Image 1 (cartoon, rainbow, N blue to C red):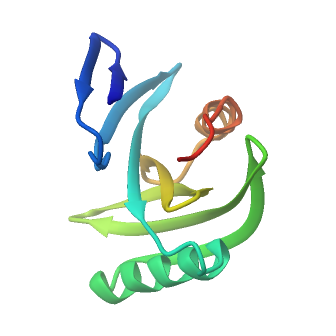
Image 2: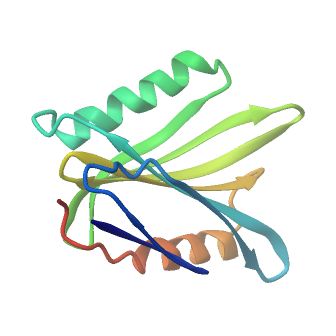
Length: 142
């Protein structure tokens, strides 16, 4: 049995249930526009190195959206796990959306955290982004 916890409560799900949930949060930042945080999970083959998997995902994003730009990407570690963090952007109508994307190895899945802002990141938004990402604590993967 899988006990799934969420802010308002929990539910028990049968064995074999795969978590494909997506969470979206709006995070206020004083004096500037808020951050949008999306957390999602994606199944991945564990024999593919996380860096290669993240690179392929970023390449696919660029293939699907000609306005997508990868500004930088680097290896990182969150909560003791192999991770990749990337700075990206894309155009949405008449505005650019800035993003920081973190890919975290979770065994058979990859946890992907994306923080988005309209335009370019302001310093207070980057500080909040670093605080949110730095607070990440993970349970042991299945």
